[in-house]
Image (tube, rainbow, N blue to C red; front, side, top):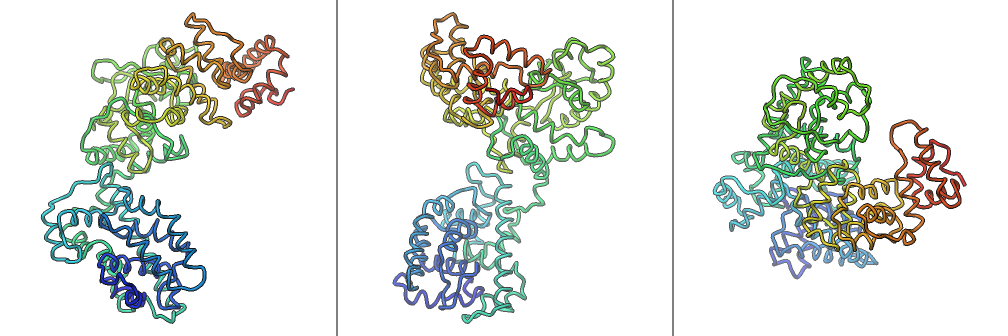
Length: 596
């Protein structure tokens, strides 16, 4: 029992003065609250741990959701114990703690009920209670555990999630116990030590297991470490998490934030994701051998970038050209690649006209094609090894993920907390959330997802208006504003309700885009309704701002400035006022960003 492991927490004296001392729910909560506060270093000079506001927040939002299982309907007992404990102290502490409890109330309830915070011990305690087990009876726990013969997982939670959370909880508890022992040894408290020398001599792991049993279900830790270890696998059962880490690194290289979503695949096939992921990491590790150089180590990158393309097929030749530092037209980097119907055979580089379509430029020759043959074949060999898993395909020059492969890569991303929604989730997003995400996606992918979102809402004028409004407001004033309003260009406005486009004419950001779309459809549109800021942004976005000679950019600017009221200085001022980030990026190299 935990009370024999953590000594001198003041539990007995606290319960003597508590009217709820006969309530087993209150007693269970008190054992956990006093024990955790003491472990975290709360002053026990008065005989019980002093619940300061910072410690109370850590207790409610971090420690209890990590270590303690609270059956439904019992959550209230834990803040109640904190309040009763604080009432034993003089001064303002009682009121400060009461405020801290109030401030943390929502976060506490959310954290305690969040499936993402579950450990194996907390999850099995929950299942056992649902089965009617007496969580204080180790024999009943063992008997009920045997009857489970495995267990379902919470919705949206993978075994790897529970394993990772459990491993973290084990580390945190061991660290807290070790610190408490060292702290008491260095400065013995008047109330006495939390841990006896005998308890520590048995091992911190044993002490931690005893606490887990008291805070979840009696005897559970021993059962999950012994006869039912298969119910709670550890890191060794998840070799594919090495690949998940590599994909996480790729995502952070692209976006810098796990919360930045990757686009949804159009099709995901359900499968044994863990087994498939293990097969995939086996192939990836084989590819790291010397015989697969120079591209064998690029397997995680290849898997990620094709997923980030919305799982649309990529080109072996184009990817090999990028690896060889050939110049690839940025406008063609994400161009979809047709997938031939025939099965993969020996790889050959596409003919010169197709290379021109894939890479851009008009000066490619047969000699260039021959020069690309070796690198492209090496890359195709890597892809064919991945394709042997059934999760990747290569057909001619095209390669990508199969629907089952898309599901596996999505699983690997999600177990590392990368936002990887499916198509149904994205359809349910608000327009602002959709636009914020799509601004970081390849244009052709964003086009399909935006169209799908509109179609799911019947392509109504209301849906179009919501989306157009988001294009003008999401990330406004930031360096990402240009990418967001640029999404207008991937929309198929030919079938958009005219009222939605006319309603956007006065939008200070995309008004000129809406005006141009109406004119392109042959419909009347009054330019006078379009604000100066929107006109300036339309001109700014039309300048050749990516790779290419600066002379072409300067020529395009001069041509636009010649028709702008007030000339170039007025145009630059209007651009800078509307989007200083994009103005500096596009006009800075020309020495024009601060003109006027």
